[in-house]
Amino acid sequence: MSGFLALLRRDLMLAVREGSALGTALGFYLVVVAMLPLGLGPDLKLLSRIAPGVLWIALLLAALLSLPRMFEADHEDGSLEVMATAPLPLELAVAAKALAHWISTGIPLALMAPILGLMLNLELALTPALVATMLAGTPAVSFLGSIGAALTLKARRGGLLLALLVLPLYVPTLIFGISTIGFASVGQDGFAASLLVLMAVSVASIAVAPVAAAAALRLQVS
Amino acid sequence: MQTLTQRLANPTRFMAFSGAILPWMAVASALLIAYAMYLVFFVAPPDYQQGETVKIMYIHVPSAWLALGGYAIIALSSFGLLVFRHPLADVSAKAAAPIGAAFTLAALITGALWGKPMWGTYWVWDARLTSVLMLFFLYLGLIALRSSLEDEALASKLTAVLALVGVSILPIIKFSVDWWNTLHQPSTGFTSSVDASMRAPLLISAAGFLLLFIALHLKAMQNEIMRRRVKAMRVAEVERGDRLMSAGAE
Image (tube, rainbow over all chains, first blue to last red; front, side, top):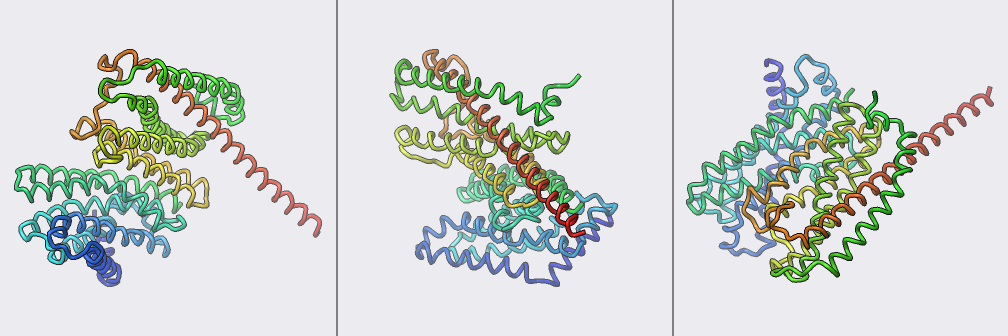
């Protein structure tokens, strides 16, 4: 367990000290959301209606942008080989890295969403529901993303390929994220149940993704 | 006592076996599909609600089954590669991907053509359509991942990992019409709610498509084995050339 925590701490510290990765993701999030009203026209009613979906999709794209970095640097400087041969199972090492990705990218993106929501005329009453779905759903984004990052580690044009592989895996998260907000907006009582399903998707990803990603990494470092 | 899959692990034996059955499969598939199309267009009655458009169903349903079946073959082959290191498993997985993708596309296109007169739109975002579209993307992802890696052995193993992760989509597609109450009708399977005059052509058509899939798959596997042999021979030739060069230099 101490190895897990040490790896988590190291990755978080790297994310804080490097800083640029998070800044890029947040900047990308802001720019995509800001471009949208320019493309659709400044109709506030329309923007308010589509705001949750736009914020969710832009969040997925911004997170996608940061995924290739998950194993790349460690692969280049050889730390990945050390992790693969260390006593800590590679599955747990992957889980630590994905968790670090969630804390350093998923949570900041989710917390930035309310501010961007103001730009899209999102109803203030919906903001807590939006942030709740994002916090519940982004673990799946990081963990499923780790599969894609591991698979495309040595691929040519890895970034584009990563999007093709990972975005279909995000469909359940997106669907339940949006439907949960939908329940909140009409005041139906399905909100809690829908949020639980969203969490279940995240928990399932946390269970499955490290195994698959570690299998993919093991094939490439040995 | 060897099982059939063990015996066929030898590529030469596989080539002989598939070469022997392939022509029969191809002819049987052509005859069955031709007979099914005859039944569909000249014998089977138009539906009392759907009219003549019901005939699209005889192609749509088998294509959709094979879209799922093709993925199941890829998943089983991937399992065979990663767990048993079966030498032909990777050949099978690689060969099945474009064929499965083609049948998925056929199911999507025929579904859209049927949807326009029946539902009034080519496309709706209902659970079945969306999940099949995701299956199509998954096929594309498998093909793209394999082609983006230069090391073929690594490419096949990584593709197998992705194929096994993606297998979770199969139950979602299968049960999407039961779990979510959306536009696409639930499967009637072979229950008596489909009249015999329509069920028979559908079954014959499905059998013909299944044989077509197997024939295409076997042929693609043969091609892949040939391609690998050519590659191995080229490598051997280059190595021999190198040896001769170095021998001549001395």
